[in-house]
Amino acid sequence: MYVIDRGLQSTRTMKEFEEGSVKFIIRSKGNRKFEEIEPLLDAEKSLKWDDWEVLKDSKVKLYTGNPIQNKRGKQHYRQEKVETVFRLVVIGNQRTNREFWFLTNEFNLSAKEISDYYRKRWDIEVFFRFLKQELNLSHLVSMNKNGIEVMVYMTMIAAMLLLIYKKANNLGFKTAKRRIAMELRDMITAILIIFAGGDPGKVFKT
Image (cartoon, rainbow, N blue to C red; front, side, top):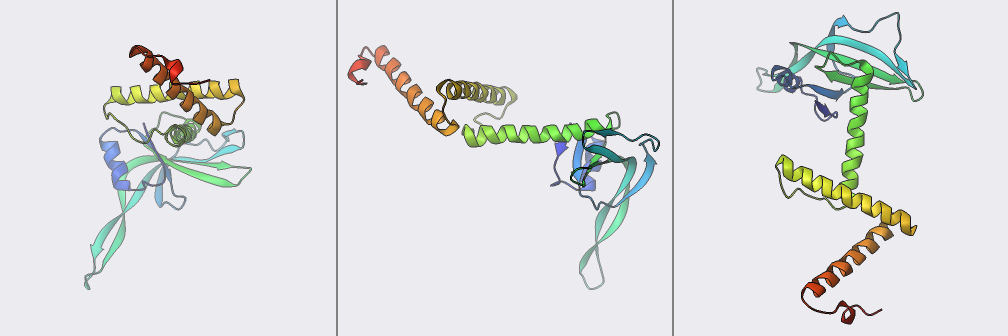
Protein backbone atom coordinates (compact mmCIF):
# COMPACT_ATOMS: atom_id res chain seq x y z
CA MET A 1 0.00 0.00 0.00
CA TYR A 2 1.47 3.36 -1.07
CA VAL A 3 0.53 6.21 1.27
CA ILE A 4 1.43 9.50 -0.44
CA ASP A 5 1.22 13.17 0.51
CA ARG A 6 -0.16 15.97 -1.68
CA GLY A 7 3.02 16.07 -3.77
CA LEU A 8 1.43 13.58 -6.17
CA GLN A 9 -1.82 14.71 -7.78
CA SER A 10 -1.48 13.18 -11.24
CA THR A 11 -4.60 11.32 -12.33
CA ARG A 12 -2.53 9.53 -14.97
CA THR A 13 -0.23 8.13 -12.29
CA MET A 14 -3.20 6.98 -10.22
CA LYS A 15 -4.60 5.28 -13.32
CA GLU A 16 -1.25 3.53 -13.87
CA PHE A 17 -1.28 2.37 -10.24
CA GLU A 18 -4.75 0.92 -10.70
CA GLU A 19 -3.81 -0.81 -13.95
CA GLY A 20 -0.74 -2.27 -12.26
CA SER A 21 -2.81 -3.48 -9.24
CA VAL A 22 -0.88 -1.13 -6.94
CA LYS A 23 -2.95 -0.06 -3.95
CA PHE A 24 -2.56 3.56 -2.85
CA ILE A 25 -3.93 6.27 -0.56
CA ILE A 26 -3.13 9.84 -1.62
CA ARG A 27 -4.01 13.01 0.21
CA SER A 28 -5.78 15.12 -2.39
CA LYS A 29 -6.19 18.85 -2.75
CA GLY A 30 -9.56 20.05 -1.53
CA ASN A 31 -10.58 21.67 -4.82
CA ARG A 32 -10.17 18.51 -6.89
CA LYS A 33 -12.59 18.25 -9.82
CA PHE A 34 -14.48 14.95 -9.88
CA GLU A 35 -17.72 13.29 -10.94
CA GLU A 36 -19.51 11.28 -8.26
CA ILE A 37 -20.55 7.85 -9.52
CA GLU A 38 -21.93 6.22 -6.39
CA PRO A 39 -22.08 7.32 -2.73
CA LEU A 40 -20.73 4.73 -0.28
CA LEU A 41 -21.71 6.63 2.86
CA ASP A 42 -25.03 5.76 4.45
CA ALA A 43 -26.93 9.05 4.63
CA GLU A 44 -28.86 7.87 7.70
CA LYS A 45 -25.76 6.92 9.69
CA SER A 46 -23.00 9.38 10.51
CA LEU A 47 -19.54 7.90 11.01
CA LYS A 48 -17.73 9.73 13.83
CA TRP A 49 -14.78 9.09 16.16
CA ASP A 50 -13.13 11.50 18.57
CA ASP A 51 -13.24 14.92 16.83
CA TRP A 52 -13.50 13.40 13.34
CA GLU A 53 -16.43 12.79 11.03
CA VAL A 54 -16.68 11.26 7.55
CA LEU A 55 -18.16 13.92 5.29
CA LYS A 56 -17.99 12.02 1.99
CA ASP A 57 -17.20 8.49 0.87
CA SER A 58 -17.93 7.93 -2.81
CA LYS A 59 -16.89 6.21 -6.00
CA VAL A 60 -15.71 8.94 -8.35
CA LYS A 61 -14.15 9.60 -11.72
CA LEU A 62 -11.40 12.20 -11.89
CA TYR A 63 -10.40 14.74 -14.50
CA THR A 64 -6.95 15.27 -15.98
CA GLY A 65 -5.52 18.05 -18.09
CA ASN A 66 -4.48 17.20 -21.63
CA PRO A 67 -2.05 19.69 -23.26
CA ILE A 68 -3.43 21.33 -26.41
CA GLN A 69 -1.78 23.90 -28.67
CA ASN A 70 -3.92 26.67 -30.07
CA LYS A 71 -3.47 28.30 -33.48
CA ARG A 72 -0.92 30.74 -32.08
CA GLY A 73 1.24 27.90 -30.83
CA LYS A 74 0.50 28.51 -27.19
CA GLN A 75 -0.17 25.52 -24.98
CA HIS A 76 -3.12 25.21 -22.64
CA TYR A 77 -4.81 22.32 -20.88
CA ARG A 78 -8.26 20.90 -21.50
CA GLN A 79 -9.94 18.98 -18.70
CA GLU A 80 -10.87 15.45 -19.72
CA LYS A 81 -12.54 12.79 -17.58
CA VAL A 82 -10.66 9.56 -16.88
CA GLU A 83 -12.95 6.53 -16.92
CA THR A 84 -11.10 4.70 -14.14
CA VAL A 85 -13.17 4.59 -10.94
CA PHE A 86 -11.49 5.75 -7.73
CA ARG A 87 -12.70 6.30 -4.20
CA LEU A 88 -12.88 9.72 -2.57
CA VAL A 89 -12.96 9.94 1.24
CA VAL A 90 -13.37 13.33 2.94
CA ILE A 91 -13.05 13.59 6.71
CA GLY A 92 -13.54 16.72 8.79
CA ASN A 93 -12.28 17.74 12.20
CA GLN A 94 -15.08 19.31 14.22
CA ARG A 95 -12.68 21.09 16.58
CA THR A 96 -10.46 22.76 13.95
CA ASN A 97 -12.98 22.84 11.04
CA ARG A 98 -10.32 21.33 8.75
CA GLU A 99 -11.08 18.88 5.97
CA PHE A 100 -8.83 16.15 4.62
CA TRP A 101 -9.44 14.65 1.18
CA PHE A 102 -8.11 11.20 0.32
CA LEU A 103 -8.11 9.42 -3.05
CA THR A 104 -7.61 5.67 -3.17
CA ASN A 105 -8.29 2.55 -5.22
CA GLU A 106 -8.92 0.54 -2.04
CA PHE A 107 -12.62 -0.22 -1.56
CA ASN A 108 -12.40 -2.89 1.16
CA LEU A 109 -11.14 -0.65 3.98
CA SER A 110 -13.47 1.56 6.01
CA ALA A 111 -13.22 5.35 5.76
CA LYS A 112 -11.69 5.44 9.25
CA GLU A 113 -9.06 2.88 8.23
CA ILE A 114 -8.19 5.03 5.21
CA SER A 115 -7.55 8.04 7.48
CA ASP A 116 -5.65 5.85 9.98
CA TYR A 117 -3.29 4.70 7.22
CA TYR A 118 -2.44 8.30 6.45
CA ARG A 119 -1.95 9.15 10.13
CA LYS A 120 0.47 6.22 10.48
CA ARG A 121 2.41 7.62 7.54
CA TRP A 122 3.22 10.67 9.68
CA ASP A 123 4.34 8.41 12.54
CA ILE A 124 6.80 6.80 10.12
CA GLU A 125 7.99 10.22 8.94
CA VAL A 126 8.64 11.34 12.53
CA PHE A 127 10.52 8.08 13.20
CA PHE A 128 12.79 8.50 10.17
CA ARG A 129 13.35 12.16 11.06
CA PHE A 130 14.60 10.94 14.45
CA LEU A 131 16.91 8.40 12.78
CA LYS A 132 18.33 10.96 10.34
CA GLN A 133 18.63 14.06 12.50
CA GLU A 134 19.33 12.65 15.94
CA LEU A 135 21.19 9.42 15.13
CA ASN A 136 22.95 10.64 11.97
CA LEU A 137 21.58 7.94 9.66
CA SER A 138 22.21 10.19 6.68
CA HIS A 139 22.46 7.60 3.89
CA LEU A 140 22.05 3.88 3.24
CA VAL A 141 25.21 1.83 2.80
CA SER A 142 23.26 -0.97 1.14
CA MET A 143 20.22 -0.72 -1.13
CA ASN A 144 19.00 -4.33 -0.86
CA LYS A 145 16.24 -5.32 1.57
CA ASN A 146 18.47 -7.24 3.97
CA GLY A 147 21.08 -4.47 4.13
CA ILE A 148 18.46 -1.80 4.85
CA GLU A 149 16.89 -3.94 7.58
CA VAL A 150 20.30 -4.48 9.24
CA MET A 151 21.02 -0.73 9.22
CA VAL A 152 17.60 0.19 10.62
CA TYR A 153 17.76 -2.47 13.35
CA MET A 154 21.29 -1.42 14.35
CA THR A 155 20.18 2.21 14.53
CA MET A 156 17.12 1.29 16.61
CA ILE A 157 19.28 -0.71 19.04
CA ALA A 158 21.61 2.29 19.35
CA ALA A 159 18.57 4.53 19.96
CA MET A 160 17.29 2.28 22.77
CA LEU A 161 20.73 2.11 24.42
CA LEU A 162 20.99 5.89 24.18
CA LEU A 163 17.57 6.41 25.78
CA ILE A 164 18.43 3.97 28.58
CA TYR A 165 21.72 5.81 29.18
CA LYS A 166 19.89 9.15 29.15
CA LYS A 167 17.34 8.01 31.74
CA ALA A 168 19.87 6.22 33.97
CA ASN A 169 22.10 9.31 34.16
CA ASN A 170 19.28 11.89 34.24
CA LEU A 171 20.73 13.79 31.27
CA GLY A 172 19.38 15.79 28.39
CA PHE A 173 19.31 14.07 25.01
CA LYS A 174 22.21 15.99 23.43
CA THR A 175 24.43 15.63 26.52
CA ALA A 176 23.67 11.92 26.73
CA LYS A 177 24.49 11.44 23.06
CA ARG A 178 27.82 13.24 23.42
CA ARG A 179 28.83 11.45 26.62
CA ILE A 180 27.90 7.95 25.47
CA ALA A 181 29.89 8.52 22.27
CA MET A 182 32.96 9.54 24.31
CA GLU A 183 32.63 6.60 26.70
CA LEU A 184 32.15 4.10 23.87
CA ARG A 185 35.20 5.51 22.08
CA ASP A 186 37.33 5.14 25.21
CA MET A 187 36.02 1.63 25.88
CA ILE A 188 36.74 0.46 22.31
CA THR A 189 40.20 2.04 22.47
CA ALA A 190 40.93 0.23 25.76
CA ILE A 191 39.82 -3.11 24.27
CA LEU A 192 42.06 -2.62 21.24
CA ILE A 193 45.03 -1.78 23.47
CA ILE A 194 44.47 -4.95 25.51
CA PHE A 195 44.25 -7.09 22.34
CA ALA A 196 47.51 -5.49 21.18
CA GLY A 197 49.20 -6.53 24.45
CA GLY A 198 49.29 -3.06 25.99
CA ASP A 199 48.09 -1.54 29.25
CA PRO A 200 45.08 0.80 28.96
CA GLY A 201 46.01 2.27 32.35
CA LYS A 202 49.03 3.97 30.78
CA VAL A 203 46.77 5.69 28.24
CA PHE A 204 43.77 6.59 30.38
CA LYS A 205 44.88 8.38 33.55
CA THR A 206 42.25 8.61 36.29
